[in-house]
Length: 85
Image 1 (cartoon, rainbow, N blue to C red):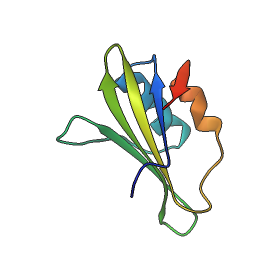
Image 2: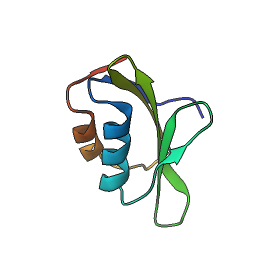
Image 3: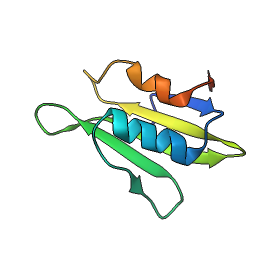
């Protein structure tokens, strides 16, 4: 699925990925391409939201993919200072 939204954060890839996983009570999947993936599931066990976190300079880039009926926006606290791409 194509990203719903993309963000650039001043926080490092590891910091953002850990925070997203911690807030969603899940773990981080490290992919061969270098990105870190965090997935949250809905009450039916299907993936509701997926985050891909890439290193970018001193910070990171976050791709956000949301299925219909996904979660709220409290996860944006993990990005710290960010800009929407």
